[in-house]
Structures are given as C-alpha cells and as structure tokens.
Image (cartoon, rainbow over all chains, first blue to last red; front, side, top):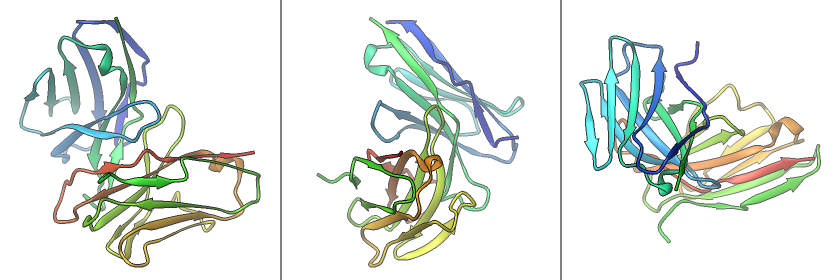
Length: 112
Length: 115
C-alpha cells in the first residue's frame, strides 16, 4: 500500500464551481499534510499545509483532515481558470521528515 | 532571479550515453533534493544533501545514478549508460535546512528523453 494515494482525475469543472480534491493516507501516525500545486512544465509549489487537528483556510482554499478515515481534502471555492493545474497531496517521509512523499496528483481543469 | 535554477531544461540522448544535469538552489539554502517525475505521477524522491553531505538515497537511485554537491552550493546529477526507462522530468528543490517540515522550493526541472 502506498503511503498516500490520490485520484488522478482528470477533473473538469466550470468556472465558479466548488472543487474537492482528495487523498487517503496509510499511517495514522502522520500529523502533517501538504498540498502542492504544479502548473504545466513547472515544478510543484507549496499551496497549503495543515496539521491533523482540523481545517485550515487560506483565501479560496481550505485544507481539511479527517483522521478517523485517514482522508485529506482540498477545497477550492469560486474556482478560476488560473486554478487549472495538477494538485499533489504530500506527507513527510518515515525515515526523514526532510523527504516528502507525494501522491500521484489530480489534474484539474477549470472551464471559462 | 532568486529561485531554483536547473539546466538544461530539455535533454535528448541516445540509449547508452551519459548525461549530467545541474541545479543551482536558492542561495543560503542548506538542503538540496533531487526528485524524478514521470507522466501522470507525482515526484519520487531520489536523494538529498545537507550542505555537501549526501544524507539519504532512495532505492530508486541505481548504481548508474550519482549526485554531488561539492561545495554545498550547486549540485549535479549524472546518469551513466542511460536507458529508455530513465526518461522523466528530473526536479531539483531546496530548503533552508533549519528544521522539520520545511517548505521545498522546486525548479522547473530537466526533461530527459532517452531514444
């Protein structure tokens, strides 16, 4: 079983829709979770991080953790065409928190 | 430009040839990472450096791969006797290196195609 798994999509929604992106993780000991955004032909960039204690909001973005089901989510409100990208959930590695383990990414397209 | 710089952006090579990629991290960042990303997958960890010391290597990093960071600044990743399965985006990232759960700053990667 992979440490973190993610639905690859692709996901296509109209502009203004609420988007829900989801990952599951395998180890209940994980406490820290990240979402990276990757535009085409670019490296990933950190979008948000959250600890396992609940929700975190940043503008149109909300990161949520459900420890009981080992489920992490990223919600995007009022989605914009500029949000079209691949979204990667990520966790720190077992052996070294310096090493980040990424999900496979969900490709999101926002239709104008 | 204060971001992570990778060169070249694209590399096309024939199977069996050696290739070398360069990464210039954000200045004063102590940690430097190499990741590999194939189409439709997330980045996979290869190795990382704390200053000039290579502290961890993934099992993905076969004997044909070698990474160096000789003076704790830029890094090189060399692949010897390339194989078609080496075709991927090779991403470099850096972080300050002062604690746990640090934000990684990625470069735009080197896209390798092995023919």
